[in-house]
Amino acid sequence: MTHELPALPYEFSDLEPHIDARTMEIHMENTIMLYNNLNAALEVTLNYRINRLKNCLRISGQFQVTLGVQSKTTEVVIIITHCFGRA
Image (cartoon, rainbow, N blue to C red):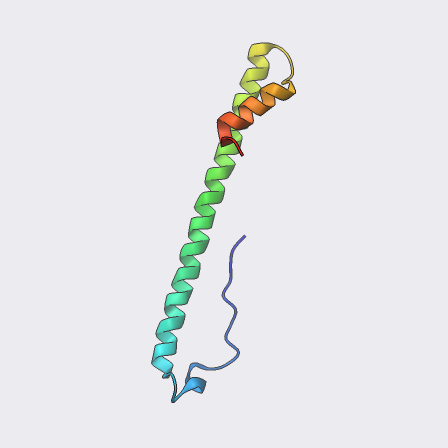
C-alpha cells in the first residue's frame, strides 16, 4: 500500500500575495520527499514482516516434523508468541 499526495486544486501563484509561489514550491517538494520516505519505510516494514512470517511458518513446519504430529493449539500459540511476542 503506497500513499499518494493528491494534486493541489490551485496553482502555487494563486496564494500570492499572502504566500509566494516559490515558498509553495519548496513546501510541495518537501512534502513529496516525506511521502516518498514514508512509502520506502512502509515497503521495508512490509518486507520485514513477510520474511518474519515466512520464518515462523518454517519453524512451524520444523515443529511438525520433529514431533511427528500436526501442531496442536498450544504449539501454535507457542510459535506465534515466539515469533511475534505477546499481545
